[in-house]
Image 1 (cartoon, rainbow, N blue to C red):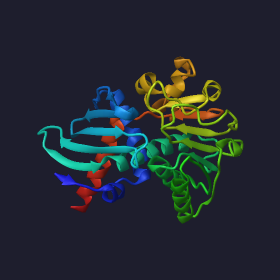
Image 2 (image 1 turned 90 degrees about the vertical axis):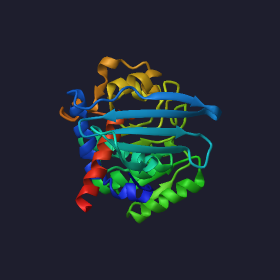
Image 3 (image 1 turned 60 degrees about the vertical axis):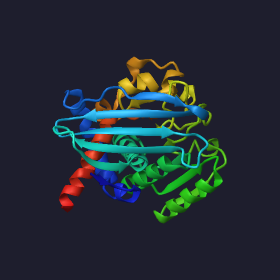
Image 4 (image 1 turned 180 degrees about the vertical axis):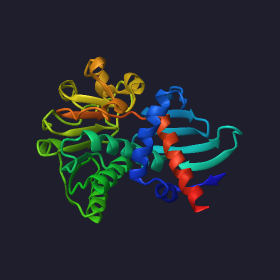
Length: 299
């Protein structure tokens, strides 16, 4: 079994290829060609969480462990094992934090390409961790975003992310409160561990909002007023019903919520648009396939 570190994992997972791969597995999953039981989640001491995800198809399967540890230097710890579906032999161990960040950003990228009224931005990132960095790279690299604001409780992390934005050729600034720039932002990404809304609803009518941080029914990054007036798209409906606190706490009418697979084939709606992602093992399977394809091509 090959063991890959974070740098090698990132090199094998280009955002544009991941965006295509994560969309392609949605149809296969709907048709019963990919299997993924509900992920299990357990509380850890100190407010943390332990998650296990499994998925398999005819070719490969994956097992992923994620630990979320608020207040630690590294909030998330994870690894993903890829195995041969027929023999069960392990093939690959990928660095899970990097894989998770990149495939999540690829999902947002796929949704924004189709749904965002103004995909070029400006971009507001609320949070400055690994997920925020991945979204910055994906959206700037593939959508042509040229201006970014960063709002984060951690000044040092925000400054590092701002430096990365400037490396990518973006104009950027750190803001103390998201509300200061919400009316101007056209792409908004919330990537935090907050359990309460991060800002008041001052989002522009033509904004695209990706909420990817909260993953329990008790946590919500978005104000309920925004959720109730927005066109809401989710990565998978089953996952959102169980874990999307942003939607659950807003008392959303689930009949109005659109799965990503359906949203990508329909007309672009009028905004604001909220894309809620809680993650799913099928997207990890898609990322594993991309990595294996690159390794096979190198052999």
